[in-house]
Image (cartoon, rainbow, N blue to C red; front, side, top):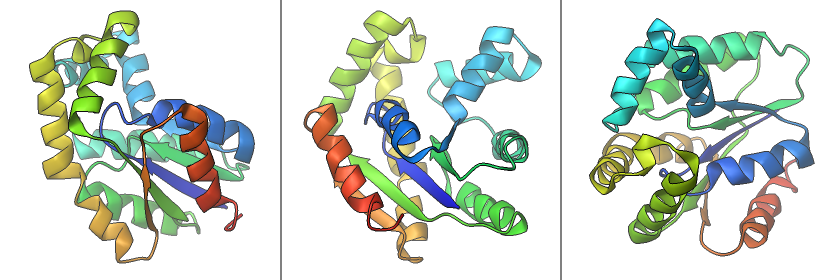
Length: 191
């Protein structure tokens, strides 16, 4: 089973690249952002609380996210692999994911990190906010908070997967095709 973590700050292009990776490698997409947004749209208790946190640029509690991931993994027992988009976001989540996957007799194959400058991230997110209607992409201070959250809480996950020789940083600037070519160049030799 091929399990990929596509990693990077908000606006790095994870969602765009995930779509292409799913098609090319026949992976099941596990986007915690999409899962949370569907809960928000359904106005469930989880969705209402998650919206409050996301609107402030804060992270949703680990136990909620990990529970959602476990359910999605169990709902796809015949999958050839998964792409984790937006998860894990903390070292504790990475450790919990590793334990969950061990219980399911699999593991993370690799983590690819898209690296993009902060100013480009802000530009991309503000532009996305104009067309998507996402309130967390329309306010520069909220975007800045999300980037700071990533830097302080999420970026240390690189060390976790580097220690397992699974971390691959890639330039996240350029055209969608150029970035996809870089990602495929890392994955193809492994599959």
